Amino acid sequence: MLLHVTHETRYEYSPPVETAQHLAHLKPLATGSQKLVSHKLAIDPAPAQRSEQADLYGNTRAFFALEATHDRLVVTAESVVETSVPVLSPAVARDLPWEAVRERFRFRKDATFDAASEFVFPSPYVPRHDDFVAYARASFIPGRPTFDVAMDLTERMYEDFAYDADSTEINTPAVEALAQRKGVCQDFAHIMIACFRTMGLPARYVSGYLLTQPPPGQPRLVGADASHAWVSVYLPGEDDGTGGSPGDWVDFDPTNGRQPGEDYVTLAIGRDYSDVSPMRGVLHGGARHTLSVGVTVQPVGEVVDGLPQTQTQSPSQDKESP
Image 1 (tube, one colour):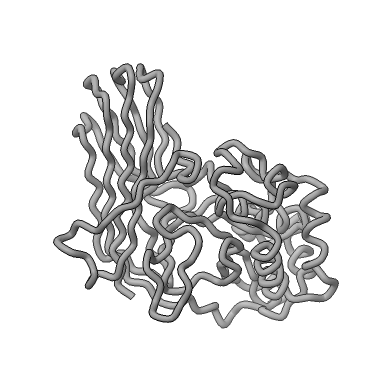
Image 2 (cartoon, one colour):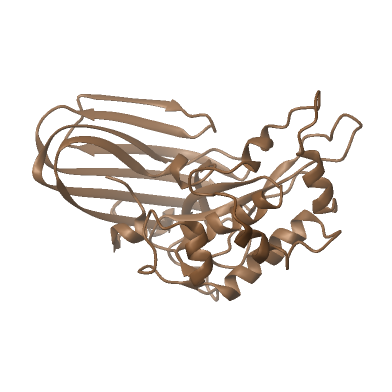
């Protein structure tokens, strides 16, 4: 699919901001199932400084600084992305039991380093907690392959949790969202990641988008017209006698109870939301602000004059920072 993504972030400040520095993760990744065709980032007012660089996880991070007083900020990212159905690497040991995967990530002196091990440890939004173990156990049946564990947990969460944009805030702990069995895609992603990490397996956070309009005959997915989030689980390769050959990451979306397909656009990956928030900044002034975000994903052929309709979301749904 050839998809056009528009992500507009608008801040209104009172009193005005005197100076500001911002970081943005708004440029889609290039992956095995996704090709970035074009990308443009428009900033109003025009920044005095701007630059781009890759972060630790390979995401593109844009920096810009505003040195003149301003009472509003509008950041619009427009991207065209070619997507295809993700294909799992043939090197992956898909039938490897989850306990064997856990053993590969136990620390051993002189063991072969696997970069996925970084995603086994707790992170700011994904702590370890016994409640995650208690919920995860029903999916982590002894001897079950990791892929099947992840699919079962994805489907269970889809059945057990209610999508409720008013039930959580950006700083709501994942264990609290687990207890109340409701939240938004960010909460569900953090809960699923926490379940895997507390069981000793690597899992990472994926931010991105969903196709706004579903294909004919398909249901509309939760999270369309807003930034979305899901989970990537690591499946190692076959054991070659040196700790296992390189594996691959496979994605799961607990908000919609399915695996992402060509109707998903991957924006960035990280340990949790704190690594990949679409916008964050440090301001001098602007004690109060209002935030509105419009996101639209459309097939390129449906974009009219380059100006697709956008839907405004509340700050609690977008989870974007000042």
